[in-house]
Amino acid sequence: MAQLFHRGANNIVKASLALVVILGGTAFYAYTQIARSSYLTNRYLERQQPVQFSHRHHVGDDGIDCRYCHTSVESGASAGIPPTQTCMNCHNQLWADSPYLEPVKASYRDNKPIKWERVHDLPGFAYFNHSIHVAKGVGCSTCHGQIDNMPSVYQENTLQMEWCLSCHRNPEQFIRPKSEIYNMDWKDSDLTADERNKLKTDYKIRSRELLTSCSTCHR
Amino acid sequence: MLRNKPRAEVMKSRIPGRTLAVAACILTLLFSVGCRYDMQDQPRYKQYKSSEFFGDGKAMQDPPDGTVARGQLQENKALYTGKKEGVDINAPVESTTDAKGNTIVATFPNDVEELPLPLTKELLERGEQRYRVFCIVCHGPVGKGDGMVVRRGYPQPTTYHDDRLRNAPVGHFFDVITNGWGKMNGYSSQIPVADRWAIVAYIRALQASQNPNPKSVTAGDTPGANETKTDGNQESTNTEPAANGGAK
Picture 1 (tube, rainbow over the protein chains, first blue to last red):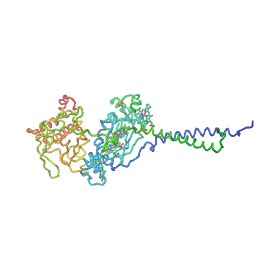
Picture 2 (picture 1 turned 180 degrees about the vertical axis):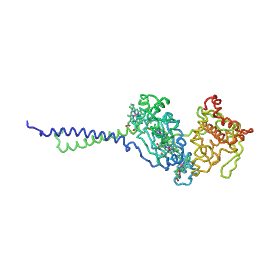
Picture 3 (picture 1 turned 135 degrees about the horizontal axis):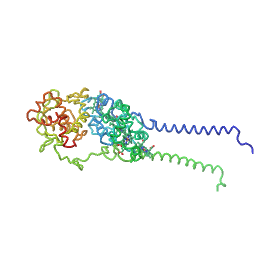
């Protein structure tokens, strides 16, 4: 029987095998990158809110504590979004005629809540709780970034499972004294590794096995 | 069967079949996306989800007026209202307006004069922390009415450090935090009852710390004098009240 394939065909086969590996690898790499990209995780996305509320003004310039508005952050799963009444504590007098505040006043008059766009939103199958993180020395800025510099809030981290686990595996790298929880300028390097390890014992943070077991967050 | 048919006809009957198969594949893929979404956004109310069922759109409905949750019967009138026994909590108080437009009142016949919680170091520390969260924005670090928001144009509140407020009973401060006063809104939705009393205790400590002439308070039987004395010595005497047990 005559040769079906040209002798050079061997090279084509080898080259195409290599190409499959390279293309496959690139595709896989691209997939992992796209899955982590801000396009899919909505990281850094600033949303159009019904009121141009600025954390930079209220927290950065006026020094209002997070808990003034997010009252349940120390006691509940949800940090709490302030009701219109909280805004009116100040804005019944202050800037009361500003057009920017018209939606707030309308909401107060008609007793209709303001419809804020959610920035952070975990899927329904993941359980998160603020109070335990705040009680065990994880500061707001570790997860939310420098809110006091944000004219409109964006998501600083991916909020993917990978991100939660990166801390649950080694919480001692991220914890701080309780007096610094609301300090937006805190750096993890402000404490030495030894001091942070001591904090971990003081807070009685549980083992890595418990914190990374599936039922901690999927319950 | 097939063999008898003209070739073209066989082709015709095959093409829709293949299209169908492809369409089925795509549909299955689409459905798998749908499944994922279902689990992401489950049909239950998370915090702040709006409701299409209730007219006002709130998923979390307020309990009907007059309902009392188990364990929430607010029997202790002094603790929950800051008013004396046998007094109508809505009784109006006589008030006047001072030169700056602040509403002021000189006598407080209805307000309790003793803290309804044991005065402990923990209570004062809690009070300081809560004061710094909720009050400092207007009343300033020591209660002189020079907070950040006032500097941005909010009308200035009166200082805590005059004889009128030094002599006011603790119940008055509780009443102001709870129901508001003059231009200040009530903070009952933001600050739980125990924390309000902690803040009141801390305000007493502030008053004592800023008083150049403590005699004017402790002399005579002015209401609130007892608290002021205790708070003034908080560092030295707190071992005794602490023995009464925790603040809450």
